[in-house]
Image (cartoon, helix red, strand yellow):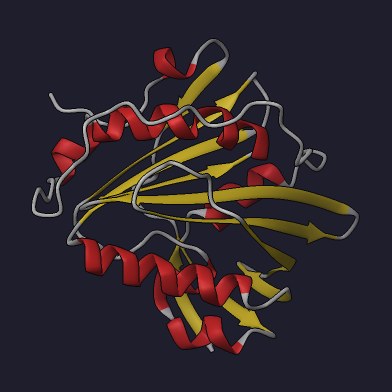
Length: 223
């Protein structure tokens, strides 16, 4: 089955595959949540979500925001994972969700190809939970599979991780390994739902662990 995707993970893969694999070890744990929770009925607009994304100053020295492309669509074939094909659309390869209220920012770090990205979505708690839950269940249900994107064949391996404790109402986390030829790259993706807000942080495992708590604090803070 071929699907059209505007990806989160595949959108950073082309850059990440140009550098050696990232270590999955990190001594930095996510910060505890201190922001005020967003209630289930407080669905935020895309403009409001945009103001709740972290910026370069909040991330710290060495981060540079990448301009978001106007479109990042490609024909993608998922091979060896029927559950992903059943999802179809953007979700089939961990792509951006279809919720209409959303905001995203991607950053490079240290002048290299190492990246971290943050996405925010807002909808009813039930819709957010069901949408992201189905994606993570499908992706982690296939330990190995392949995707073909833009003529490039990528070997994929997924590993379900325990979500961070004490953050939000629900959490999901996974480790994805992308391999093309002799090059291999590890990407961590962690999602936290708190009320009507969903946060997804993806990229280098160490950077995800370092900034997840900070990103959630700002996303949940009231103006």
